[in-house]
Length: 522
Image (tube, rainbow, N blue to C red; front, top):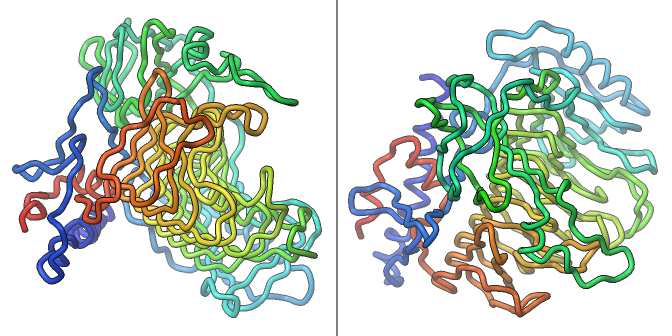
């Protein structure tokens, strides 16, 4: 069985278990009948049904995220080389082994080799760098007594850095205008001035320009100021969504991932162009490791900062990694990261000042990334996106405890994030943050909370360009920093038996042609 079919079978089994759970429980405990959203639900024919709003927007499909868009299992490769810990600093010892694996030829699947770090303690004085595709670093377990790497230098650095080179480059002469006056959220197609230069499989950017009129209409040129506040500037909000052409029909282009922000002629419309990113690396994996940082005190701000940092990389994964004591995050996916899966990872007991840009357990400013089955303790913003983040992105089945601040889009317009089955003893907020920071303003649009369990939640919608959704949220609804802002779309508040239990899993199964009708019967 190939990876794709194997993954479909596993996904179907997991999804059936997750999505049918309410009925199994219902028959024994007499729970209330399953509650379904009016916006996306499983119909009598066993298919997902999306109900558009007054403008034609629907909740978008979030399932094409993570490693190979969820269409392939995380690979399991044989060990190529193994090393054991040595006395003293292990940086050179490990880096030489990484470089040796990096020099091996790529196979047909883009893989070079696996470096196994045997059980033991490895003090590391600076960043271990992976700069080539196809390199896997694997330990013998994520507990402290298994494979344990310790960042020892009293400086801010990433213990493991995964990064290619270069940047995204527009292919000259390929830019065309989107000619539709309005393109709704959730659609996979639109008309352009000329489709002649495009073919199935082309890598393209769907470009949505920032304009002064748009900023004025969402009132981000009117942020109440304090020292350091910056009003939003149009050039900072030119959004570039990376997509793949799936079909060309005359001047109509079809794309793999949906449009996730309204594109309107009155706000500059949109454009499409081909791109290259020759230096971006892929098929890099990190798994079965325990990462730590040495520190001087509870609020030490000068020590190991990030467990694993990923940039200029796609179709990579981090799995079964525990990070402890880092000042910033366990895993940080940077601007040019794409289709990364972070699964079954933990960020415990961070050490840094409990304010400002610290303690962001799992941080994402890339696109098409998936964080699932993760845990955090003592964080500030544990599952978080930064500014101008182009979705879709997903945080699924994650927990946070002993929190000091909120989960959610943090500032300056993240687009299309799904927070699915997030459980926290703190806050999950989507709101206009106003003058917070240096003028955070509207944190995001087309943000979806699905079946989350929180202490408190704020979900507000901006005045234009989309909505934010709270569906099946359990916890107290509160007013937020600016109670006069438009309310988000709230459905099923404090419902105990939300169906389907997971939007991400339901969408993944639907895309893989699973018959969901069995789950619509009690």
